Length: 308
Image 1 (cartoon, rainbow, N blue to C red):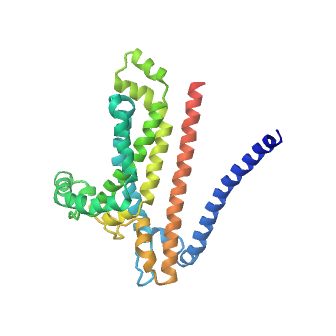
Image 2 (cartoon, one colour):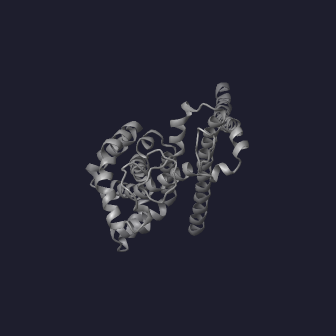
Image 3 (tube, one colour):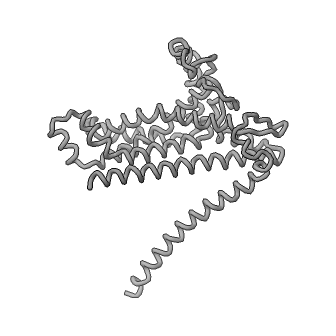
């Protein structure tokens, strides 16, 4: 009885300590990044975020092309991955035969276990030649009036990076979305079908509205991986700090820049600039998560008010 009396307080204190330890570690990481980035912040100020010249020889650094490449490659990945992932999740949760759902789901989840460098090698040896010789010339011929599909077909570039990232985040988004879809009440589905709705109408009116918060969380998890992915993107994006609307052109991401240049940084200001890039990447990730949390809370409140 005496032992039982102390177990609950100890358990509460232990779990609380672990939670605060995570907060402390996050704060420590932020402090270390800020301290290491201070020389660059003092030297370049806010112009670091909107200038485009990155020259390690002259110690002139502007991160705008790096930020642009990171956001555009992640956006391309989401545009490709989200529709495919939701289609996969709906098939596995509602439409596919029962005997194939679990094996197929297991195979898709195994894609998440493939090392990043393997995706990069596949992209470099298979995807890049395919884009250079077939896909990009086709897009330039029939959609060249759009600024996104203009210029020479290099193979390496933002399009290749976006496709690689989309393949890498599909398992995350589809698996979580499938779990979310399966939690929708059967009474909602059966009610829609009983009222004469088709399977698609049942999905559109019953499953998707009830699952939008969970699906948003799945998309954000995929976006988080896309923003922070390093090796695979480094091998196919071209690693050139340029800003261009064309997806054919090479670009750079923040994670790839840090991985490529950190060991070669020979001056303190170069190292500090790379640390500031890492700080910007962390800030973008935090801002996206805060925005997503506010969006989820807003959607939850609206759903609750409709139910009441």
